[in-house]
Image 1 (spheres, rainbow, N blue to C red):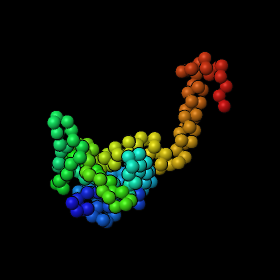
Image 2: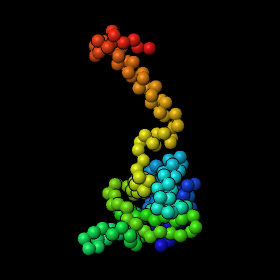
Image 3: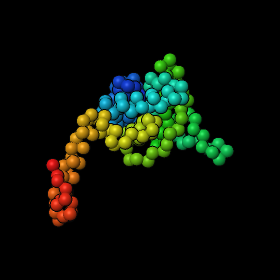
Length: 174
């Protein structure tokens, strides 16, 4: 299959057909254009795949019409997705020594836009990235800012004698 039919994600960018882009199947790829986030998730995938003995150089994702095959009543993860667009997400990895794994089915994603499907698949391969992690990646001082905001809200709450008359008299708020 030609590389113009799937998304190639590397540590340094997102590519379709060997060219850097944020567009796949005529849609902008949401969140894939944030370099810090893409790199963070890519590194999580590298760590996760290292546990399987794979030294990942690239992740390939395709949104295909090919559904997961059922063999003897059980889902079969490995297959050959068609290049025809669809909601079924498949991935494979290319290792640093140039070998490619088989295509593996990840999930069927019925989101409205193909680009969110690609991000959902990428995120799933990393084991899921929480909003907190995203905030930390995009703003390293996020936790400190959140702690200051929380402290401020607690002070405001304690000073309000309508809600906590006993605490406001007994505790000193600095």
